[in-house]
Amino acid sequence: MSTGVLIVDDSHFMRNLLRQILEQEYRIVGEASNGAEAVKLYKEQNPDIVMMDIVMPKCNGIKATAAIKKLDPQSRVIMCTSVGQREKMKLAVKAGADGYVTKPFEEPSVRKALADVVAAV
Image 1 (cartoon, one colour):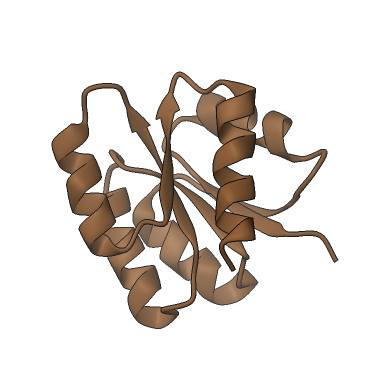
Image 2 (spheres, helix red, strand yellow):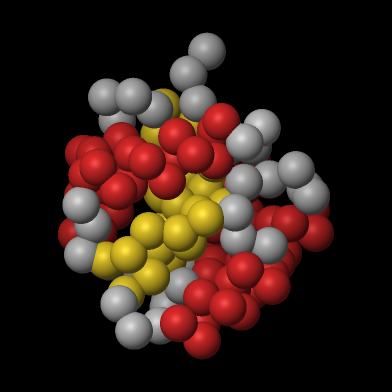
């Protein structure tokens, strides 16, 4: 069975971009547009990896990552962050993020981030 990925980003464009990059190697189990949806979908789909945007409405990626890690300490979350969000990235790591990729996404960096997290298990 292939690795299941949950894509979380408030931007439809970014979710589509990540899906296009990942769908050849990974099974996309769902998409969420905010952190609250992400936590709900995590409970329902139990993905192997979550690609989580940091800045989102309703519930940001840092809070959602902390909630997912509380539900499942073995969960693996890769944060998607814009250049220049160093402080938010530090908070994401404290919340339990396992890795990160920087926007604008480049296919090799996204694939490497996922491969590193998969290999770390």
